[in-house]
Length: 349
Image (cartoon, rainbow, N blue to C red; front, side, top):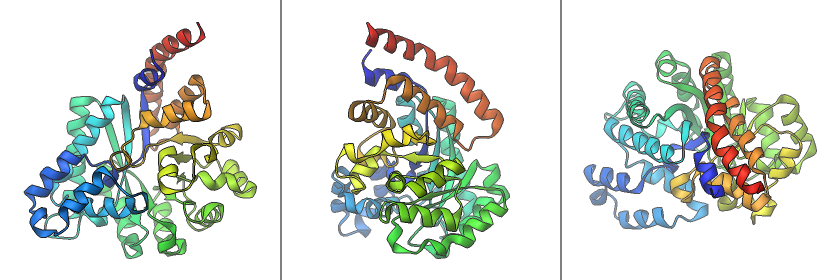
């Protein structure tokens, strides 16, 4: 068994899958043609080409543009089902998918209720066909602070709770709006008992992460590798037990690190940080959660048994309800034992 085979066989969960960064090109083109996008968009061919060779500095722009081609509930259901198929091929059993509802609703095509129904239509189909479950993190784009109150209201409402929404998040480049613009929306989410997630540190480093923690009090930080740059900020995260859901590929693609050795994965592990690996934007990065684990092993020498622990920890750090989490952990311990034992026996022989 190769190391990649071992990781693929290992049951996994994904805690930061960006919907618009996970859209399958073939389905996007089908949807675009059905919705008349080529006739409406003069540079349509250019954006299709960008899907194959996305410029790292334009990842957010590309995701926003191609995501706008997804207009109707049936489009949403299709792309969610596609994500379930892709996850099943990696033996990812559960994913928390980050999606900005303000990118999709507010027109005659979809309101919030039909949007949530479409997400769950795709989810239910993937669950039945591939045994892959998904929940939703409803996100506020940083460049659209006016959406904050709406997203907080949607995410904390009864339709969202019934519709597998588990958290509210903040996504996008830090430098487009000050984090204080989102303080009220996060306060509303906390008041309603909703988990919150913040992406921080990509542009402003540890100071940006510190500011996000102080202003938003998130339950989870995403792609906050640079927390390791500042001992005070790192100790605050460690003392509070705030999980870090980070993508190696994302850091390399977006310039958080010039090369793999610059990413402080070992330092975070040495400090017992609550770390989970994520793929983030698999289609745009042409990567996968399996690739993240393989990178951790090949570039940093993270041992197989440590990666098994990280995979298990990802379940513990999920926003699943307690009973579902316990069931998933129990199943993980049963399923992980066989591939782990085969790989470790071979590697030590």
